[in-house]
Structures are given as structure tokens and as C-alpha cells.
Amino acid sequence: MSPESSEKLLAKERAPGRRYDLYWGQPSETFVDGVGGILMSTSVSKIDFYKTTKSEPDPEAPGEPLETREVVCRVILPTPQLVEFVINQIAGMTAHQQPLIEAFEKQTEAIKTLLKRISPSENA
Image 1 (cartoon, rainbow, N blue to C red):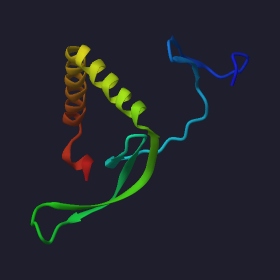
Image 2: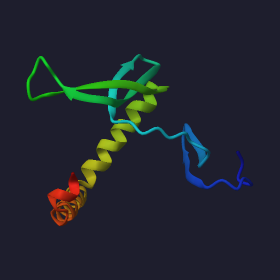
Image 3: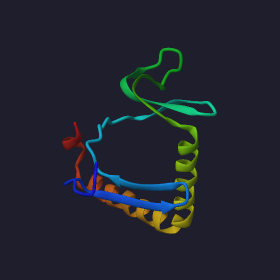
């Protein structure tokens, strides 16, 4: 892809050893419910993501649901990039902790307000 491309430029980096232009391509999207596992080696890491396909009462633990989960996506990337990603995400969340907490609290209150407007008969 080149600057002449009609694709959107997302980021530029010009640091020693890190020189790139990042463009928006055609990424695949898959909704997942969670992380099923991570396999890490010194060079490559694999992250498995799952979807919950079924939830039913657990006969071995009354009152508890037993979920059936299916791995639906695996992302494979160089381990140094995974580590860098995690460090950057934690640093970003730490640096913006108070605004994030406030945003989560606002979302929670907005959802509570909406739920209070729905009568139980509408939920059936």
C-alpha cells in the first residue's frame, strides 16, 4: 500500500528501528466472549478467543450455569509485539485511570436508567 492509496492513514512512526506508515485495510471481525488461552514462546504467541455457544444448569453444581465455549479465532503474533501491546495498554489505562472510571460509571448509570424504564412484563 502506498500514500497514493485511497485507504486511510492511521499512524506514522519514525523512531529508530520503528519506521512505518499504518493504513486501514480490510480487517476481518469476529465477535468473541473472552480469551480461551494464550500460548507464548520466545518468538511467537498464539491467543485463542472463544464464543459461548450454550449455557444450561450444571447438574454437578445446582444453581450454577455450565457454559459450552468454542474457540472461534486464533491470533498469532510475534511475542515482542504482544508484550509491547500489553505494556502500552496498561500504561494508557493507568495514565487515564480517573476518566476511564468516570466513563464506566456514566455508562453504568445510563444502563440502569434505561432498565428502570422497562417494566417486567416487557422483558418476558
